Length: 294
Image 1 (tube, one colour):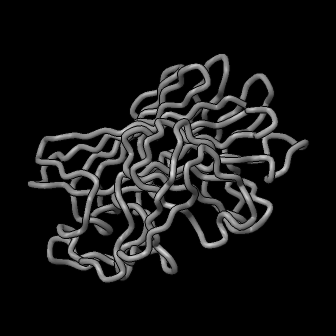
Image 2 (image 1 turned 30 degrees about the vertical axis):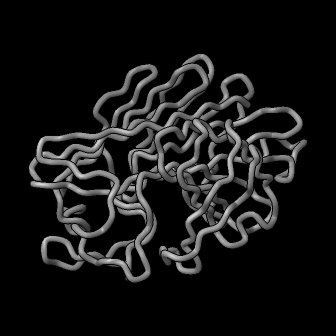
């Protein structure tokens, strides 16, 4: 089921399946600013990544003495979340551990998504609670897709990623199979604020940048300055990605708090590097704020 909130600038629609942002419309121009999820290209809009990001080593985990198969980016994006509250500018959905999730990951948890509008900004806060587990370890991240070009007068070549600080983004490689190899690191660029969107940029999949100094990363229309800007402050990992097909029809800016599994990493969940470890009764939150200046 879909739920909509709005203010005088933008209209946000969220789907209860995955608590996924599926539409952000500029109310003055009617422009849709979120990727359409064309199944022939990439069938997602802005999935939530939980309880892990990327792939699992061997496509599986061992948790509480049992083996569980796991697909990419966890299961939160593929299950129903329940509406908790909806006001004019704020929407809250929750996912609690249930019979479906316990077959995939044997832990009790609460995952709360709070969407709040402020002018042209969507604030999306993810809160995780540990109700009963002695320790709850998890990974988490955001994966929004933004539609480009912004209008019919522009093409993909007219866009660039732009940092708000001078950066030499160091990237961790998960090539060729989506798992960390522990040896391959590279600079995406050196001493720049700009990464041009080119046909070659995503030919080998995403780029996972570590420890950026910038507080924001935007996709910018070079001749007009119109942009979609994401707050990335406090995130140890920020990915950029699109399908390798050219011309690009969307781009993703993905702040993560955890990494994919390692090629030869541990299968035991308790030994897998995590974003957060919560004791019983504890909670933790992270927010991604996206501003649509287009």
